[in-house]
Amino acid sequence: MKITFYGAVREVTGSCHLISTGNDKILLDCGMFQGRRKDTNQKNREFLFNPEIITNMVLSHAHIDHSGRIPLLVKSGFNGRIICTRATTDACAYLLPDSAHIQESDAQYLNYKLVRSTLYKIKNNDTGNTKKDKIKKLLKKNNHRLNSEVINDLIKKHNLEGIIPLYTIADAEQALTNFEGHPYRVPIIIGNQMTCTLYEAGHILGSAISIIKTKINGKNKTICYTGDLGRFDKPILKDPTLNFADDDRKVDLLIMESTYGDRLHEPVKDLKPRLKKVLQETYKRNGTVIIPSFAYGRTQEILYVLHELFIEGSVKKVPVYVDSPLATNITRVFGEHPEVYDKETHETFLKNGLNPFYFKEVNFTSSVEESMALMRKTEPHVVISASGMCEAGRILHHLRYKVHNPNNTVLIVGFMAQHTLGRRLLELGQAYESSGRKGEAPLLKFLNKTYPLRARVVKIDGFSAHADKNEMLRFLNKSNLQVKQIAVVHGEDIQAKAFAGHLHNNGYQAWVPRKEETVQI
Image (cartoon, rainbow, N blue to C red):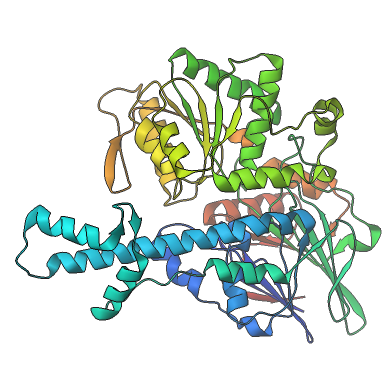
């Protein structure tokens, strides 16, 4: 049996690994590479293997950096089953079409800019603003929506190289027909003498640790793929599994994430007090709290803690807006899967007839018009909006209206990958705070404009859905798995290497594979 590492190797996006036996090829995740477009576009469009020869796929969870290229995989000839939990199937029904919509919208906008630039350069009798107004009227409907039909016709007419979306909504909907949702702890046949059993990973709703077993030449071989491991003792979800079935305990190769391989989070018990402090300080300044948040998992955790604070009367009850249609839909999915909630959630909310994620002060913003009106609100409130790394979506417009005001707070509650706007915002904001906020505020460029970053930037690490260094070691040391060797993946180069070093110090045989490296067990 061979394993080849194709994605999330010495980086944190694009998870993709291939198990090959004499009979089958099983893909572990098929995630999207995220970051600067010029760096990721080609990586996302090309597979380093033939999708047509993949037998089946095991999907650890629904996050786009693990699932985001599935529609392209199916479009490119994959015709197998996608094995995952039932909650992951339900989440992907919203996440993948949403990702496709982003692909289509981005392509449309880039094509608009390409055609506009071309028409600006063509000589005619019009000059200055008159020419620009005519071109704008030609390429847009009602001065707002892009006229795709006209734009596409002009691309053909002028022999321009237009942008083609990675995949379409139709492609995403077709890919969803390949999904199979399964319960935890039930073996699933995925190939010839090959099974997969899913265990709770504690990362997000439906996330799974996959135990894949096969028999080769009469000998049993087992691979454990952690996907992304969650934290211990966090609200809502059960902790990462420590007690595996006896038949699943002996692991020949563990493929393990390392996002926070050399970092420690704030204690889980400090989450609520830290959030309480941020809210109180911002309200005292008569400001607003803007929270860039992943629609899946992080948004629901924040709503959960806010709900607790409001029940306790610990903070002023101000309006809370979830400004993300995707987050609204995913919150509905959370409500449909109480079977995965932990004991605390059942005790605090369900036994009292309360939904953890819905309360009087929360408002789910659906239309663009509602979102635009919300951006102009000046009285204290909380906005939770996507995307989590500030690369796209409605959060950009909330930042546009709010980052210049020192009364406001931008609350960072998740990992910000390198080369994202979220990482720049965090680093510039922290540097400004460290300087005592002296001198001119740092400048943040996005949406083709530059804005002074006068708003407070605060980070709460404890909300992370990823286990930190000690929690990952706790998973290994406290679980009943017997692991022969560990391939360290899903971590930036420094983090992955550091975590491999920690594993060595704890008596494990571990290494950090390179992209396209193949190992045999």
